[in-house]
Structure formats: structure tokens, C-alpha cells
Length: 326
Ligand code: PBG
Image 1 (tube, rainbow, N blue to C red):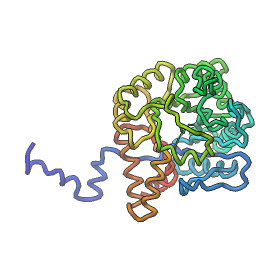
Image 2: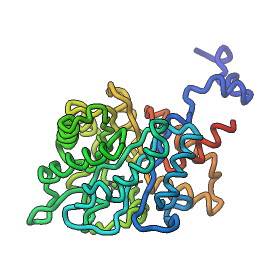
Image 3: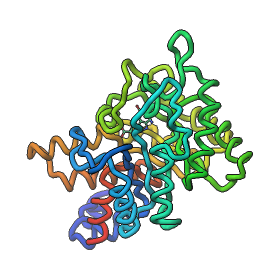
Image 4: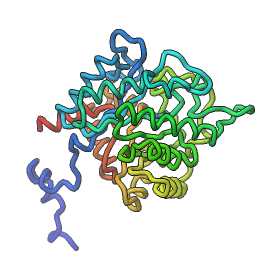
């Protein structure tokens, strides 16, 4: 293996040569578009910390879903922003609540042409902003939360979700949701488990996107960023409990975790390029500090290269458009 027999530059000489020898490619079908629907909105409402992303009305959400189909995007992940919140997140169970209605609306719009996924978590629905209900000490009560998650899963399946995405990091959540779905006859509703989800400041802009009421942090349930080995445990548990797909989140600061999970997972692996990752690149590009399109493409490609089969990214539509044109 020595020079000049090997000149790695030979395979970099032209765009066509680089295209032919690229080890990884992006495709619209691998992208999942996260989208927000807010109750009682008459016009789409911009999210300041995520330039280009909006809270949707039901009309604009339907258009976004139809556009995703046109672009060949793989799926949409829906988050609801309710008008009224309480300690137990009751609105999450209402069949006419903002998220369940949003699921029903886009299922009616796009049918089975797009995989409709829904966030299965209480943080958007609780007045304290935590992903579960609180006990007398203010600690997030794992098992009391599970019972609500099971009912949420059934409500979302009944509204038409193809996939539910439990993101609350409660122990046992996948098992309880799987059982609830089976009991209610939703045997084909799949579970995308947020398996290795870390507590992260990179979720910052998302707080604005869902008008989060959270004070404090989620460190008693989301993973500690110091931990690598533990991600394998979380994935193994979710697989045993019945996860159909697993996710690593955030993406860019956790590419080592993603590579570990990709190496051991027998089911498809997703990674979530979260709101703060989006905001960082948009902010740097807006200042003229980096090339926006180049940085977006490279960031998503790095996530695929690390082993993700699918990538949740707020750039899904724009990126799919670029991929279609090239
Ligand atoms: C919880 C949830 C969060 C995100 C997705 N699902 C917030 C959190 O865990 O604090 C963050 C996504 C992003 O930052 O883009 N429902």
C-alpha cells in the first residue's frame, strides 16, 4: 500500500468520479420532517430561534404534508402545541386535541403516501413542562406516566398515526405502549423509540417552538452526555420491549453513539438533528460565516455516514428539493 501505486486523489479528480465513488448518499426517502401544529392559530407563526420553521395551522400543515409527498420525503413527525395545559397533560388524550386532530387531518390529506409519525410525550401538554406527571416531591413519576403514555399511543393510532414516537425516556415506555396498542387492536402501528435521548442544551429552540413551560431540566430522565455504554443498554431494553425502530438524539454531538447503535441494532436506526443544531447553522450562515447549503448537506451526510438509516431534520423539505434538482 504505497505511493505511487496508491494516489487517493485519483478518485477525486472530477465531480463524476467523486459521485461514482461516494460511499454514502442522501435521498429524500431517508428524511423525516418534524412539524409543529398549534391550536387556535389563524396564520402560520414563525419561530424566532428557528428561522424558516413555523408553528402550523391545520391548513398550512396539510400543505406541508402534501409538499413532503411531492418531494418524496420518507415521513413527518408531528408535535402539538395545545392552547390549554394542566398538570397531567389531559389534552393529549382528547381525540379532538390539537395533536390528534393534526394527525387525522394529515392522514386524510396524504393517506399512506407519507409515513405519519407523532411525538408521544407529555411535555407539550403539561403546565409544568415535564415529560411525565409529578409526584408529591415534584419528581417525575415513571409508572404513573406510563399509564398515560399507553392511552396516548392508542389515541394517536386511532387518529391515524402509522408510527408513534415515545420521546419521554420513561423506563418501560415501549413495553406499555406496545401492549396498549395490541389490546386496542392497533397491531400494525409501529413504535419509533427515542432510545438514546440525551439531556441537551441543543433542544433550546424547541422550547420556543412548543411554548414550553419547563423550568429546570430533564436530567432525572434523559441521558447524561458523559455516557456512551449506557446507550447500548437503552437500545437493548427498547428492542426487548418491542421497538420497531430506534433513535439517537441529538445527532451531531452524538455521532459516536450513533455509530455504536448502528453497529448493533437489528432494526432501522434514526437520528434527530435537533432544533439547536438547526439554529447554529442558520445563525452562522445568516452572519455570512459559513456556506449555508454546504453546511446543511455536510451535516446531514455526516449523520448518515455515522450509521443513521433515517434522519429527522428541519431542513428535510429544502434538502429534498436540492436532491431532486441534482
Ligand atoms: C419531547 C421532545 C423534545 C424534542 C423532541 N421531543 C424536547 C425535549 O426533550 O426537551 C426536541 C427536539 C428538538 O430540539 O428539535 N417531547
